[in-house]
Image (cartoon, rainbow, N blue to C red; front, side):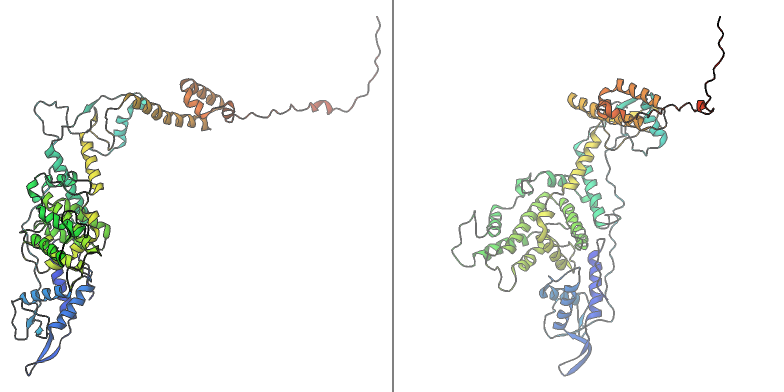
Length: 528
């Protein structure tokens, strides 16, 4: 039974928990063991369980080879606590599992977790600005212009100017967008794109959209410095200066600008411990409890690299600005430390990269209610963040551009035609003021193209007589000499349309030759 990739969606952590238990029960070898002069059937040693589960997690694409043996032991402790396993005397409920030779066994039934029933958030839809609502002191001509499909009748009404009829029309001005309207648009469009990337029918199962603060999204997008780091409006929420100095020291080691060079061995480890202790005492992780399910769902996209990057970009925009800034600074420091060959090892037994993941995973991602897979899921996410932090923690330019264009379209003046069954708007066809020079240029270039097409149609039409064609071309030349001169710059190019016919010589009067030659006969002359 091969482990399957558990994709995004509700209760992903629970689904992963149940999958691991099923594979562990199916793959763990059970044998007969002796303990204190007594034999026990269908059991296993603790060290054998660690070997088996560690290999299983390493080959599972939901977790990967970065899972450590220590993390595996912690998971087996939770197995013992939740009665996934029990000792040979039937005892369970405590997390006293050790990587040793103690004997354990599986209980008769597999204690799979049921999927919790979350309080329904309903199909919450972000309300857009209500254009139909009449505003005091505003003309009723300022009405909503609704988008409709264009049929032949509508096209006739809109384009009747081409056949000489000009329908009555008037400009329609949108109501001015307030800051609250713009914030609602940003929130709705951002959540809609997140739902699309995750491939979910609804975000309600992984996120209560009421808790999403639209002001946070706008601050994270626009209040940034040249490096993309968030600039906080409330300076009291900044990291303490001494923590920033410690982080800069290790991130830029050995070029420390804020601190003097250390004079004793182990200075780097002391600085690192100070940073770990500060972030470890936070009451809530940087990704917040409210967004835990969202980020766990994103983990199901890690096999699709670009999709995972986009999903994390959008998800991180939902964070409070102070959390996003701390995450940016922390993950950047972690990535630099793990790649810094000039920095002495910060641990005797653990590689620097693994140490970064173990030390900061819990302060980046964890659930409010203790989850049995918190540590493994957090380690997976933090590893991906470290490898791609520059892309993930930057503002998604495509999303930003599309929302800005959407807002601009809502603010543009549009046209309402009388006589139509319903008002219509045409995407990207909005009126706005232009300069005189630009108008003259558009008039010249915009009108010449259809006129040139009309001239070409006349010239190539083989169904009209030569006389009529010459007459039409002469009329066109008189009305639009510039367009005509572009198509027929010389008389020779015009003459190609009317090739001269070769004149045939008149036939010889052969009728005179049909009679045989008659000799001259003398006639009698009459003289007067």
